Image 1 (tube, helix red, strand yellow):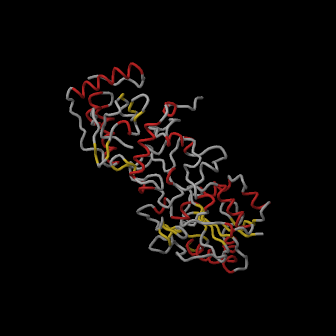
Image 2 (cartoon, chains in turn green, brown):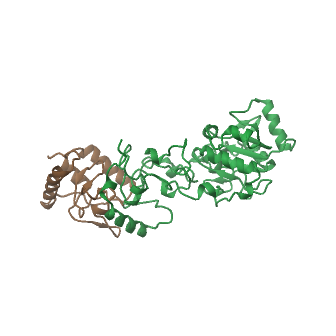
Image 3 (cartoon, each protein chain N blue to C red):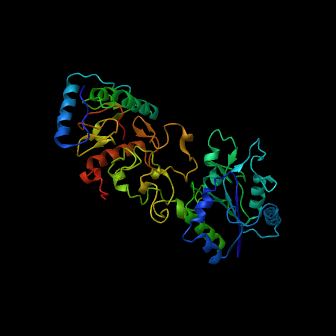
Length: 320
Length: 113
């Protein structure tokens, strides 16, 4: 039996909603099949008010062993570092987060807000939001760069806006069943099993990427979304086209550009007008190139690929 | 002013391509410079295509800075044939605000790769 406590800071509840839609395993499977005891969760917990506070205090004191502390949403520090804008159970949530993280065997940050600050931390960041151990790409965050939980791991970051439900439940199962040691984290503390490949990996539009045929407007079933519509699939680490959403699709499969939501810089360019759904260029060359590709190589590759494109690549082959 | 044909391909493309070629060869001065060096400039030029040019072929050519020869900018050749809006087999510019038949060796300041 592993005790799990889930709290929300500056959050929209999107990751909770995602979690509740998990299928492999489901949120119920966590309890019935994998021995996770959910002490409290904002959308599932029965306790209110002082009864919730009592659970939190017992976790902090050690009276209730806290195995997994899950945090969703930003750690809010406003105003002036006090955290008073986000109070919970009688005090700033940031204090609960710090004390519960110190008491837990494992700490898991779910979603962009808890990992890097996400949308709330976009400039000018009026809520003085941080992630648990990062602010955007800068290590530190609310718990500090050197934080490790009792089990010796840093915060396990599962980013996304929201995180895919199965990323969440599969990591929770791994931790709860004593396989945390098998988890390999990348430099941003994301489980490599999910975040080593790219969103583009498995994308059904890859042939259009290869032959440099662009989608030039929404709704086109042909064409790659990278060249004009701002898709960040080639630069974003996520398995969105390997572990499909609702088991059937993904943003890019549905014609929606990847917005890079598993990367610390999301939302990119601080959502400045003209930057969303539009590939940013410098003298005609994308400002952000596929990872590992330099400008010279990109120009050579794309020019050659364009010249070699077969006629079918320019047609809509997804005929209804 | 001539109006752009809806995207059709075939003879319609050929006729329009020849018409454009004749205009460019005849000395039509287009705004080939400055090139769209930033996304802001791209947005500005595309905005002008929407508001000033619309279906006016000559205005499109002028605002987009279409030329019948490649332009080099920032040490890069910018011919239509390497532009992401160019359909190789149809020899056609698929930028929604242009949608005109072109030649691979032409260029415009909205070139992007």
